[in-house]
Length: 265
Image (cartoon, rainbow, N blue to C red; front, side, top):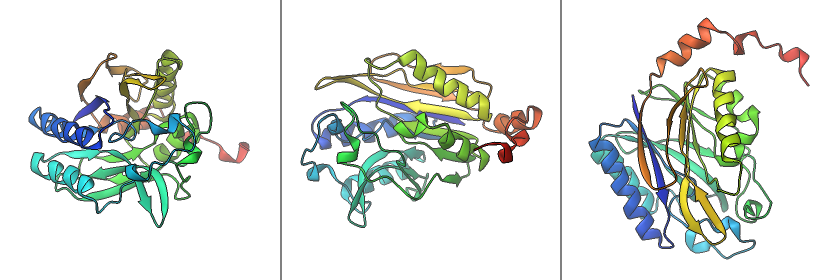
């Protein structure tokens, strides 16, 4: 399969971000991509850098026109997409990635489970932590998982999805140049290696307030190798992914199968 990572710079205007997202879906489809992954909260500025704001105008529901537009773009371009939106369910707001199939149908949802609260990431002011855990989506492309941004710092997140059979784990994120970029790359590489799974992480770029988003979106193979790495500007990174090789490697090197959970706390 061919994977596209839509490394984007976000404007303050939601309509402009939506217009750019739709264009990237069409572009990825024109390049023959099967799946496009977007950064975290792709339709809005990164509002969690500020505590306690009124961001009610940023909240979406699945039935809203912006979500329908993304679904229609997937249907028109015959491509899967994993967009990340600020969504409301049952009166609560979540940092949520959707999985949309080639027919424009929402076939999966993954909400952020661990919610950060620290300078520039006042996310507990805005996001409800999900109690639904980590999901696996069995698609025509293969078994896919999604780990939303901060969740990746908890190895149980990737491990849980790998144990449930994921061949590819998608991570929408918002990493800045003030953070340890090289360490974050190694974090992804090591988790890919330890779990014999492909991992793709897609980041924002550009200056927003005091935050400079660093890009460097990355795809790692199940052997921990870096298969593709973007730069620090806007880019549609296209990557070939041999998904069946993940399960072949798990059979050849059965790291997860030899676990002894009875010895762990």
